[in-house]
Structure formats: structure tokens, C-alpha cells
Image (cartoon, rainbow over all chains, first blue to last red; front, side):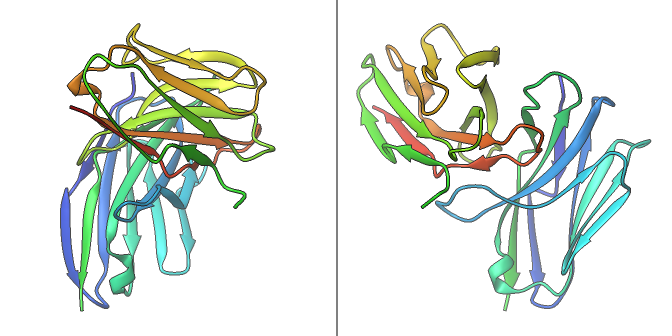
Length: 114
Length: 113
């Protein structure tokens, strides 16, 4: 089955700096890669996603890049703010079938220091 | 609130007892998922429904676990003879057919004493 690895597990940055979180996946059949943000005690919420036919996607301060050959994708947050502090999860979804269940990485605790 | 809802939000039980959780998906979503999340980890897939049919089950789902979605709307997840290792957050998610995004509920936190 699919395996997703995520690094780093913790990341501290100064407010205004950039943060980068990296994930690798094992199954080349995966074709959908979402990123979820989970604040303490809250539900995971989608912040950005990318499909395998696209190399990069940007939404304001957030961007995701995908390298299908290397089977890795990254989340980039620019001009970080204290409210960006949360746990971020990457995930991958297998092509084919109707389920498209998500396989998640183990998460990155991002702390933005004021 | 038109999002995914789950009930109860917290459940404390003694080892060996049975528990049942409920998930109400977003009304137009015919796809429903159950995930389990332990502290410091990402959610792990348990099972998937398309309408009322349970089409996928993870090997994580032991025979003590059973899930239903009898009318293709809400779903229940039952754990029989709970064990301490079942302590986790149980998350439900739903999505609309033809769309990728899964919307998560707030979860049910289970503590088995």
C-alpha cells in the first residue's frame, strides 16, 4: 500500500519568515495530494491540494510543488503569521477505484514565533 | 452548521464495553470515510462507504469494529469489547462524488480505561 513520509516533525520560524514542509510517497499511482491544517482540538481542514498533472499550485501565501519523478511534494508558506501555528499533514490518494482514501504523513508541528 | 458532525465528541468507557459513534455527513455527499487518529500521528483510514455500500475496509479494522450506513446518510461505527489500544480520535469525513476534497468532522475522542 501507499506510504507517506513527512519532514520535519517540528518546525519553528520567526514571524514573517518562510516555512517549508516536505513529503515523499511510495506509490507512483497516487495522483491527488492534499495538505490539511489541524489546530489543537479542531478538525483537519484542507488548505491546498494538487493533482499529479500539475507541478505547482499557489493560493496567496501558500504554495505546493510536486515532483512526480522523485515522488515528493512540498508545502511552502511565505510571510508566516502566528495564526499559521498548527499541525500540518500531507496526504496522498491512490488513483483508481471509488474510495480514494487518503494516506497521511505523520504531521509537522509548525510554531511561528512573534 | 452545514459541516460534518459527529456524536458524541468525547467518550470514556471501561475496557470490555461496547461503544457506538455517529457521523452525519454533509447532506449532498454520498461518500463517507472513517479514520482513526492517535496522538502525534496523521489520521489512518478505517473504512469507506459509497451511499449505503461499504466498499473498502482497512486491515486495521479488526472484527471487533463494525460500521454501517443503512440509508446512505448518517453512519455509525461500533467497537465491541473495547481495549486500551482503541483509545484514539475517531474522525469521519465526507466528499461529493466527482470531487476530491474530503471534509472532516470534529471527531469523537475515545478513552478506554
